[in-house]
Image (cartoon, rainbow, N blue to C red; front, side):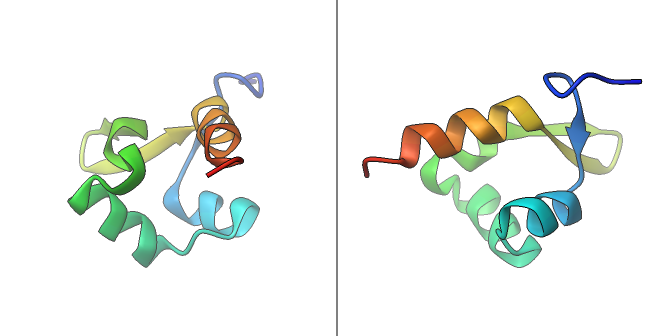
Amino acid sequence: MATAKTQLLTPTDVEREYGIPVRTQRMWKYRNSYGWRDLTIKVGAMVRYRRADIDAWLQSRKGV
């Protein structure tokens, strides 16, 4: 079983757990808004995110 640090999330998981809609994630990725494209991991045709990367990204946005 994957640990929380290495756990990969689908865009739907990110929406459910962090409240960022899938459509918004796609737009941010396309435009590279807020550095979102850098968080993206491509697995074949699928998009995944590391939970630790999302958590770190949210921490970095705290004071903005």
